[in-house]
Length: 199
Ligand code: ZN
Image (cartoon, rainbow, N blue to C red; front, side, top):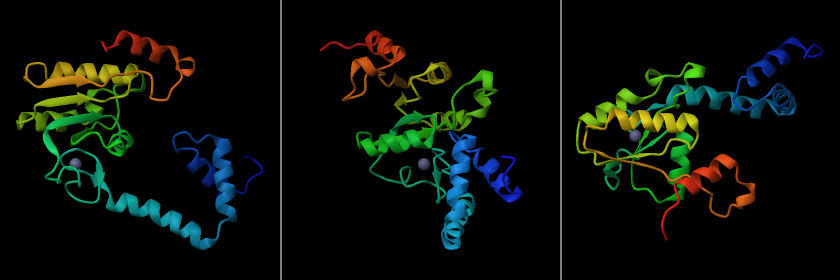
């Protein structure tokens, strides 16, 4: 970084804060921005500011939206008795794209990770509790990620609502469609065997 001018150093260090962007990628992105037209750079900068100004969390499901209540929560065609609980908005988007789910969602904005200082209070659990206490929920589908943090989060939610009479289900974890067993990691494979279903 030493050889870069100060404003470029600053840009690289800001870009390197983004998830999945190391210093090398940040330098590559900074180089792209340096070569881009002023108009393109302005559009990029404006889109960053606009997303912070216009987007907030849906009052019901906590998914980022422009409205007070997001289009999914306000859609009369969705089944409000079923809530699919996900960690992040990108999981919600993936499930929506699959087109198989017609209930509503709840976005936790994270998963339990005590070693990283993320406890129950850092997740949108009180909002979920409020929805459940308001009644008429028949099922919670726990679609947190199939890893240690996701499993711990699903278990915590199961405990929170064990006396509520709500049915709680966990997504089946296993081999992705079109996947080849030899390329699947051991953890996934063992889980898919453990939770095998009869044919
Ligand atoms: Zn919503």
